Length: 102
Image 1 (cartoon, rainbow, N blue to C red):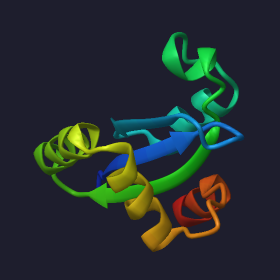
Image 2 (image 1 turned 180 degrees about the vertical axis):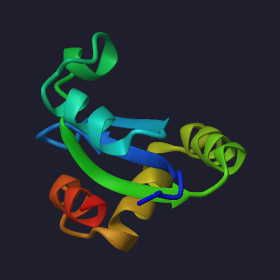
Image 3 (image 1 turned 180 degrees about the horizontal axis):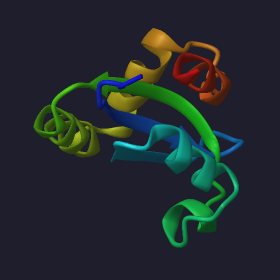
């Protein structure tokens, strides 16, 4: 079965929601698992960014890159508003993403 390639823009945070990290990937499950297990050296492992709180899918890689750049330019308040619009409880969405991929 051929899957249509999708690209995901995501926001992750730490346990206390003090740090927000925005990224883009074509390997959402693998990338999120790497963050969760702190295999990503640098910013995300240093600040224990392990909780997926927002993600968006795009069929076009250029749209995903543009969206990631847009969100990265936003203020913290605007990022929080985006998260709370779709995930007001700040649930970890990793399991939902896992189920969608099966």
